[in-house]
Length: 308
Image (tube, rainbow, N blue to C red; front, side):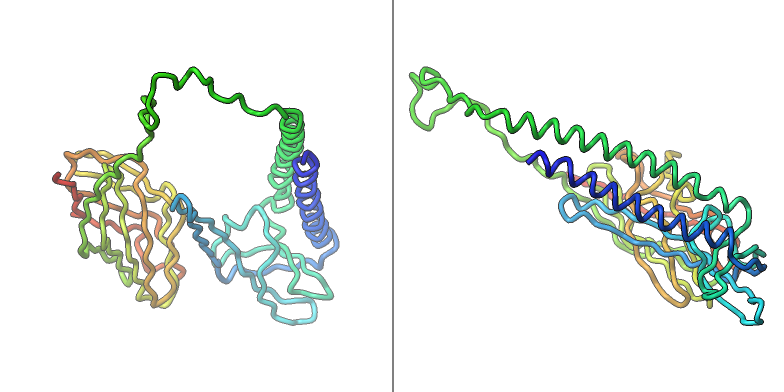
């Protein structure tokens, strides 16, 4: 048993270290011996992955930002490729000039060499060191716990016979655990919208469970380029009393060109019963065609409350 607690974390640690070393070696080889050239960022690919825990029904999201660059090799071949990840990925925007190093044998293998990209391994190495310390500590603690469990072979002490004297069978006086009564939900459905150019954002559903409010939002992009509505600190909700809220999950909503995307956001704080309406706003809206003014606000969203 104790081997399971020790060997599994160490095996995971070894796999992470090997993967990180191979990534670092390939990237360092390109930076040191790759063919240098200059190119341009042609677009930014933003991928949002949603995860839902089936046990707790809590959702989370992760966002991947990958630039796509275009450059010409020494032989005159025009290459469009996504370079290896670096620290500058989140800083680049379409149209940025970039220094690139690529493999002479396979120009699709390239790396951005600009704005301190060579220092991009520093955060990765720091995170790797932290992960190593955590896994080694976990293995040590797991081995100690397993040893204690293995040595603890004493059976549990049965209840005293005298404990039940004078009590009829089935007439115990101990406490009984009961499930809490679920809070009632108040729901409002409708279409509270705001438009900015070709982008339309609509709140279609509001659910209030004991002050915990979630919003179902639909975003339609009628433009020829994709639009991203950042959540993070760029989303705010304000009730009629001036209280401000952010939302979970903290991830962008990416809307493809000509498409419609729906998502559910949960406010980070309980809303008071005296609040009757919300104003929700997204700032720093990102669009590749730059046809937006950078923000969109939906007003007059009602806050339902359970009457009973």
